[in-house]
Length: 554
Image 1 (spheres, helix red, strand yellow):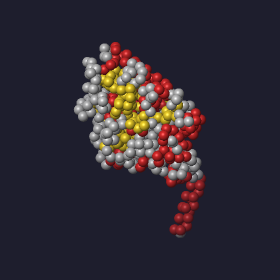
Image 2 (cartoon, one colour; image 1 turned 135 degrees about the horizontal axis):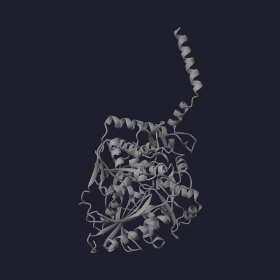
Image 3 (cartoon, helix red, strand yellow; image 1 turned 90 degrees about the vertical axis):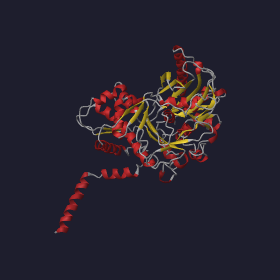
Image 4 (tube, helix red, strand yellow; image 1 turned 90 degrees about the horizontal axis):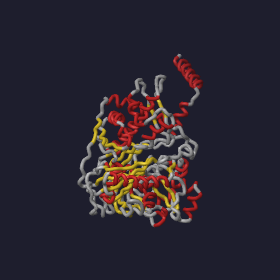
């Protein structure tokens, strides 16, 4: 497309705005080689228990600073930044930003995807639904009604923040996931910025029809969200607009994908039946189902995998979402203070000498797929007098792998074809101990690419292959080298460990009452009633039955 060529050929930039950091990376389109990048951590705020917020302006500044520092890195490497022909965006999904279109100022902090303040909102919207069925909208949007998704966050903001109410009434309010906030600001902001999102991010709001790929009036009415305030939905790969300031002013933005879908593209899972698992703050397994919208009956989500072009067909995926993965390690470090350096967790876990079986279910904000139990809370089971802090660290790492197996079991039931290998990416994949654990506990090889930045790579591929850019040929992709971890324990040992994990899961359920009616889930209520029978009453009743039996026999 462009005549600008240096020693690495055309370059494509990738903005990767995640839950814990913002980054800008530069790839060579012809080889997929990562040339340079810069990363800035994003601060999370927790004003109340279960609330997780971030500052949208800090995120925007971090993204812009990453771009400028990375461009400076290119100069130091004697690479001409003008060789960058396009930029893609990938972002944390479901997180909601709300701002005033006239001033450009946020009306509230961004509510992060794992925030659970909307538990009561979920109960309220389901109050008139038969049996409080959280799957009542799955046929339209592919998702259960959950605190996880954007619609209930928007509803909470409209109900609880006066500035948002006024902005909605005055038609000055902009709602968006993180991609919309970045695209609007990077293309001009209040001076003509583009108010758009892509199909992958829109599919995580509970407001987009999974088949028409447009905002759905029934869904918007259900959540009482004005449809005319929502951004335009676009494909994942097209020229949306151009950067309006900074060192890359005038460069087109031509790719946009939610982070997990971007990792699926970066792992080159373009064929039906291919899957990848990303280990970050949470853990997310996506399975390409091709052009078919597959509705899960085992707790998985139906989502859009990608739509690479205006006229291209949408490709779909089944997804298993785990809320707590790397976040559990941060909890051990920052809250319990039993882990000094997260990067040393593998060495610490391997130093466990006792034979006790400790299981840690990290359900800080409930359990996501395949259970979808907002009443669950974290438990640690199997502690003995010999248990030490290093056993807790090991149990936290094992929990990541057990939760992935939960997803794989559900995926096998939905698809009928078990995976023969698991492609992995994300920060935790640098931990060899975890990767071997994953292979052992799932019983299939785990394949880790040598170039681990697959999430950012996916956004770069979407941008570079867009019509009008055309520097990235998705039909002629070179394979990426990888490490393979093979199972090293017996099937009996694997199944024994997994059965104990399932016991720990059962013990994590039913800790929080249903706020809508003050009751627990029915199955947990029955267990609670049985377990709360006074011991004295049980003994008296048992003795009476024995005496009565003796009387009948005589």
